[in-house]
Image (cartoon, rainbow, N blue to C red; front, side):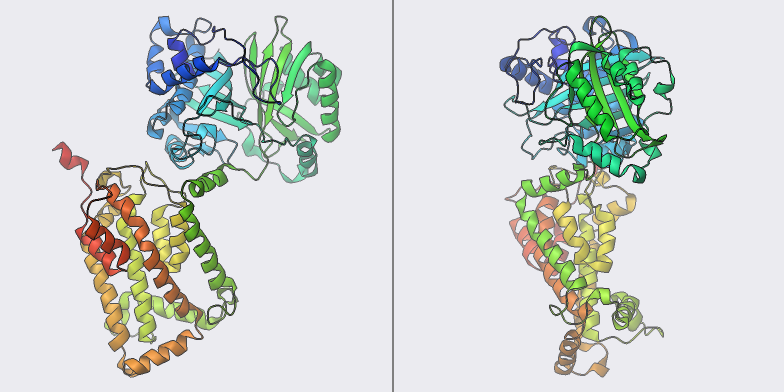
Amino acid sequence: MRLTCILIPIALERAAAFGGLKHNTRAVRNAHSLPHRQLLPHSQRSSALDMVQSASPFSAFADLFNPSKQSATLSGSAAVGQQVVQSFIAAINSRADPATIVEFFSDDVNFVDTSYYNPIVGKDELRKHFYLHAGSSALSTFAKTTDFSAAAIVVDDIVSVAENGKSKVCVMYHLTDDDGNDVADTTAISFYNVDDDGKIVSAFDVTEPVSPKPGDSGLKLLKTVSNLIGDESIVMTTDSINEKSSSTAVEQYFDAWNKRDMKNAVAQFTEDCSVRDLQYDDAFSNRDELETHLLRCKDCLPSSFNFFIDDIAQTKQKAGVLWHVENDGEPLSFTRGCSFYTLDRNGLIQTGFDIPEKAPPKTGFLKTLSSKFEAEPVRLIPLAMWVAYMYILFISDGILPGVNALALEQRTWEEVRDLSINFFLVSPLLHLPFSPVVHPMLEGVFNLLLSWAAMFACFLSDERKEKPNLLPFGPMLVGMQFLTSGFLLPYLFTRTPEFESQVYKEDIEGDLQQKVAEWRPLGGFLSAVGTASIVWSFIGRPEFGEFTERYNSFIDLLSIDRVGSSFIVDLAIFAIFQSWFVDDDLQRRGVSEDELMGLRNVAKFVPFFGLAAYITLRPELPSRNSEME
């Protein structure tokens, strides 16, 4: 994959560059680069990148209908497919909004980014993925807050072929930083299928392992666990390319490898070939070195292991291959990969690049999460508090009174049941016959806590199509009614930052969520429940005596009660963290940081009642419908 570098699509097409551009040789990136890789001079690359970033991501797609702007080397659906893929990459480089980027894809797209465990199926899920995981891998788009906020995808080579009005496109690329310097260990290969409507219906992307390279260790591990990891779902196509006649050097190479005929396998390469298996640090620079490598791979893998071609895009000069490994006819998990080859005039392989799928653990989700802490280290506070909370509540003995929650003490579950029956004090106030008798102060604390948790529903606008969260706010809000801080804290340290300065009611998903989030009486209603809970603590259930008597009995209860003492901890946590929602909520209502300071501070620093007042007095989210009128 270290071939002549062609900077991405549209901008270079406008400079009459793509496909036929000749560029000067630049110094190799690092010790792992192959000597035949060439790069544009930095000045040319910078100007080209500027053109890409200033271009509309759809302008090149429109140019498909202008014959003068199509590639001189391609025609028909092959040209369409290549230009669609180029436009998609250019849209990523130009930082187009994910809602725009997904328009390059069909509604039922199957998008495989091997940095993650599962494929992304469907345009809506892909849009959510692009919003959530920006910056976690090259094709997850670039995050606004990462070190590579000015990074770019640089295409090293591309091949596109037509088939029944559709097209297959294979791309090699790497990343550069904002200074135009190559980023180490970012070589990647992507394989696309584009339908006759010019939409990408499937995409597969695989990136080289980070240094130090795993070498033979990956093969040995695969051999060891081969009987445990069968998985039919990894096959990217139902057509078996291997069953067709192996007419080209690339197909004959795969066929010979599966027969363990390494002499015939290396015969498909030129004498001075250069092959890079990105599992290894260095290239294999001729047939002899390649044969030695293939024999070593043969010794590492059992004879039952075969490489199957899922898809191939091949011309007389280049070939891109999507493949996976099978063990006795059973596909193996995490064994997919892509290869890119260039061919000489005799059809032999001149250069080759093989990138296998990363073995678990997959790093995509972890990169997404870690990037949030890098951008906002303050998130470590709720993370640390959540870890401490879960440990103290469920595991520890001696920190909080009572036995730990994992002991499953019968009295604990009976107490939780009784408090739930008396939810919002409805049962005891109506004197329902099934209402259990619970200490009124414990009931008061419990219902005050639940009304406080319910008050966070006023921030449902924090979850939108354009701002999904790793932990969706709706389910987390429901969870807070059962485990309060156990759900609030992880939401706080994983939530997506707010970038919008104006949000509309219609942006909140779901009619019910829209109504609840912007229902002004919510603050008054829940503050009334909280007030009633406090009053009930002092005067409810007269049989518990006057204040001093009921207070002393409540303290005695807490001294042996893990559930009750955890409620007190929850009240403190809610008081500390209710402020974390306020600034972002005002921002999406168009309120600048120096406006409404009185209301802002009341909402942030007056526990419970300050938040209730904020819900009642804050500016409403505007409606697009009313603005249109």
